Structure formats: C-alpha cells, structure tokens
Length: 114
Image (cartoon, one colour):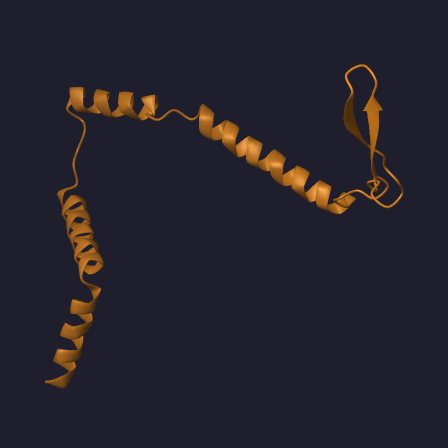
C-alpha cells in the first residue's frame, strides 16, 4: 500500500511505501535447496580448478622445444617420412570430404549402378 504524506517544509508530497503481509518477501524458504547448492558449489569448484590449470599451462611447452632443438642441433632428430606422408594424405582426404560430401555420395551410387 502506498500512502502520500505531506512535506511541511516544501509543500511537496513524497510517496512512502508500507509493506503488509501480502507483499512482504518470504525469506523463510531458500530459493535453492541444500542439495542444489551442494551440486552447484562442487561444480563451481571443479570449474575453478580447471580454469586455474588452464591459466597456468604455458602456450608453448618449453621442455619440448628445448628437447627438439637439442636433437636438431646434435643431428639426432630423425623424421619418419612414411608417417609424414600418411598424415598428409589423411588430411587431404578429410579436406576433400568436408568440402563436397554430396559429391562423394554421388560417385559411390554411380559405381553401384555399373
């Protein structure tokens, strides 16, 4: 219920709000039960741990870089040309499939008709 009280000094009426039992907020029942709070809290803690590990992980793994640099400088770094060529072919196939999957399906259906 809103009532208006006169302000004697300025001749202006200022509204004031009175709270009755109908519009009084219910603070006795929490918005989340204890189980929900516990689940939310444990998930938040887990996310905080993941975020911390992510932030502490360097973008460049210095140990690997140093190891590879030492092998290259010593002449002990060996490339596996078969493994490299297989990876190149696999990536090329993936690229082609992602570009035109419908063309690959059409070619297969044409082969089946012959």
